[in-house]
Image (cartoon, rainbow, N blue to C red; front, side, top):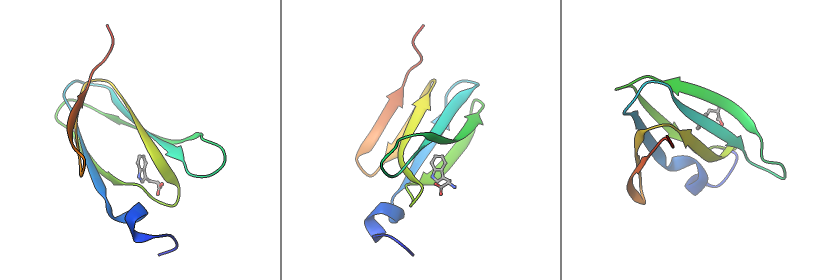
Length: 78
Ligand code: TRP
């Protein structure tokens, strides 16, 4: 494993509450770019980690998110 474990060990869980939730991975390093986008339909779950490639995750749409920090719900602006 290349980098510190703390960066790689935590999983986050995203459960889509509506169709078309987007999970977007943003790059680690000096520039911050989208590197991956995953579309979830209602009820679908994604389990992901922060990695050497991913330092931030953006979630667009209505979803339930579980992390080691707690639970939060994202909303879609109407
Ligand atoms: N190949 C990506 C990476 O290692 C996969 C990935 C990990 C990802 N965590 C993510 C994609 C979070 C989107 C969101 O960085």
